[in-house]
Length: 164
Image 1 (cartoon, rainbow, N blue to C red):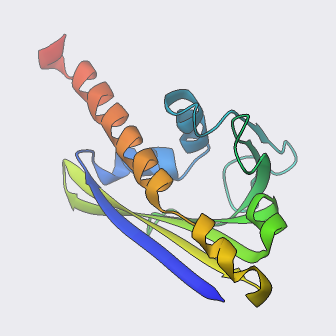
Image 2 (cartoon, rainbow, N blue to C red):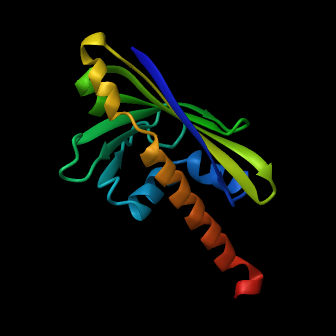
């Protein structure tokens, strides 16, 4: 069984500022800071952890979560098109019948002050585990996009000369 969920969310932040976060390890750092109820801890694999293609992260979810941890690998980081693709490669969804769990972030410039983040989850799971497709939700990614967008917008306004 294959499936896909996708959502586009507009944020009041320039695309270049968003990409500075989404295209790097800064995204996981901000999620850890802003949303500890989503991300208890994370580890960057020092051998392949510079934020580019091949980067491996271990994501530890909060105690009591149905999934304790998972490892993800950055399989695409396209600076020009502002697209980042991340696959779960260990733990998490792979332990409950999924053979693929992929998240894609695409930053789209709207104008000089705003942009959209298109988040997409692609997944595949065996027929015997088809009921587990109910675990897949785009909502956490919506909350991440909104929280990161709000944080960057507020940070930019704080640093604006008129607000000093």
